[in-house]
Image (cartoon, rainbow, N blue to C red; front, side):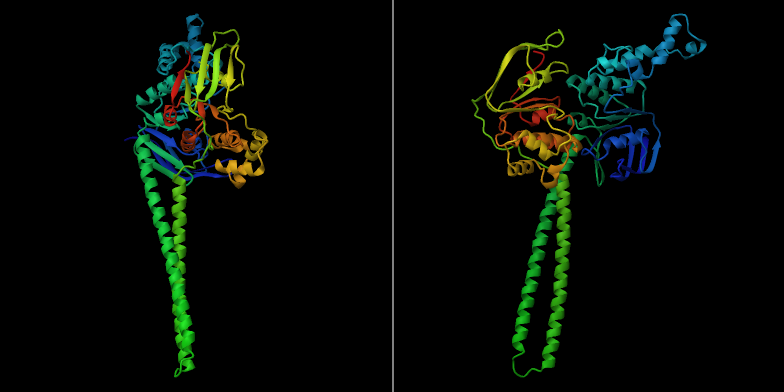
Length: 527
């Protein structure tokens, strides 16, 4: 397979000098490669290095390809679709020609297939209604991402670099990205936590602080191999623990034998017929032998303890940190929430929903589904009591809490502990420590400022602050909770939500996530 791009012994650092990765070597060819890893390991930095937007700390790069790069955030400097595609001047030249004002250069450079090729690229990404003069400011975040992808493929690159391409996309947008990659004949390097998307990959590369691992298959193959690695690490840990116990037992036996010999030697000194010289020599030999045995046992104990530490470290790196959401009991027949005849519209536009009624009973797990702009987030805010509907009412029969996708109830300038105390003023210091420890924020970890947390840590801190109080809410409302999580954090949240025994009301476009948390029903918007 022809190599499109080669990275040789690449190292990268953060602006403050922290190492992200070292001596990374990688060959990219005409295959679809998924790049995964925990937040902060340098995935986006690696894409920028490949794209030539930032320089590595060391190493060499060799490119044999025309590159296209989709950033996480569309460049706000572009005003129109034409700007995004980089064809504004070409279209202006064509307009001058049609108006009879074209120059010789305009005529020489004219490409009369331009508009049809733009339309084809937009249609391929599910945006046939857009045109070159469409203002980017009029588009949703998901539409901007799809338009940027259309601009990318319009230029026909050999290798595309995609940084979280399905973030903020609804199901239609995600399907468009899947369709693009399924039919892509060039190379692709895709940073993503979208497991549906990763199933379309030919190879998975995992970036960690200690190196890079390559798996020659898609997400399902990666999970299978990862399970094998965890099983092997668990076995190695058990073997190391047994070795430590055996070494400790052996050292104890050697000490006991030495103590018995010392005791016997003292008694023999009082026996008749033995010279002091002979007794001293015998005692010296015994002490020398005992010393050698003790040294050997000590080395074996230290070696086995070192092997145990390494096995524990490897096992802990492979196993995600899981946390619990607390114990509560919600009766199956308990009325949780009743919403009646809700109607909501903005600025005299068509209502997002009209005469909508909803009842939640017991520990139901409900997903609000629908395309972007259908009113899911608005409805969640109304049901959480954060927004007043134009018509209708909402009645609560249990305690409830809501986390939006940015976990904006937390103050970025305060520590996790101080946020907890602010949101749970009745909690004692012991309550605070115990609650945060349950969510894996122990000791100094609880003193981190919220603004410095990763997406997964921020969501975990938000859950700790709303669920860790003396009285936990029995209804938890979550708006797109997985958008800013890496896969390890996402799986930890899935595990925690599965153990939650209250009612759940949630929006998400991540079908794998929704299936993992065992939904009881879905509500499709618009109704």
